[in-house]
Image (cartoon, rainbow, N blue to C red; front, side, top):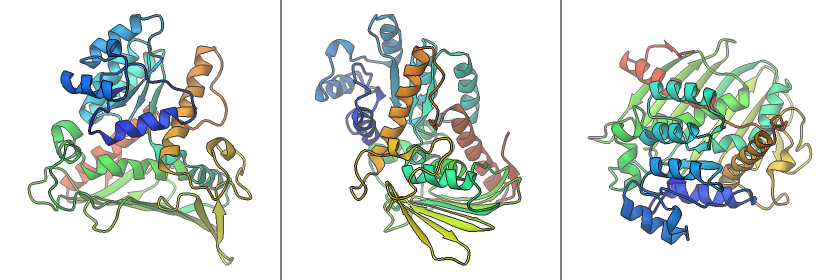
Length: 376
């Protein structure tokens, strides 16, 4: 692991998720940009001091030279470090599992895509919400035509933790363009919403119009975004991302409507998917319940569940599903076998999509919310 030391919430999430299905062992780390904190963090989680590194370059070089060196690295740093860290490990043939967004800038994302294309290693982006069983079911239902032609896509991700100026490590780097990149809320949570909509619908908008706001005085990046989206098919969408919505903890929701039916999913009730055929009673679909494997790529949903229906699964399990799918893909590559069927791993294309989304939002907002093309 690179990053994810003391005080880093996402590092602990990745550590728990990677261990959940027994495919990973954490054996090395450069857990902080501060050598002292890296050493303290390594000791706190029981890491061998000999494999606790002061910086990621030293770690990549040393681990690549070891007979039992790491097979994969988890990147849990602020956004501005994603590119150099991923580059260092991919160049040495070490698989990369990276938190989102892929990089801080679109230019870096394009450069990393080129590097990854030449590397003998996988790059996986942890858009964890795309790995929930009911999201995979929703994707399969849309692909099967259960909704008919898609007309409307509504997705939102609202939080309240930045409603006021906050003095904390997590808030500081997310509000700093040098570390977070050009996007505030659109980068931190808007990319999740955008990728989730693309996962469910199988469509990516080709145009958008964005109204970005920084409501908290002195904040340098957006903390609220209203975005209209247009699809080549004629479908239309709206995306709202906000970190200044009091009373909203982690309000990720998606609604998709076609000519025949609709779907609705809320992160706060992740094991339920509502299917609403026109003129018929709404149907409440549950993880592990009847019809839990609708067929099609990525829909062997029993594989994504660990406990019986009625025993809640959620956020950590979504991350764990991606880690386990990554492990299966890595093992297949090591054995010279094709990637197992049914995996749905976000990767370079999802990362590029996220940075193109951020870039288009900023260009649109600069042009007073005019519609702009999303870079191909």
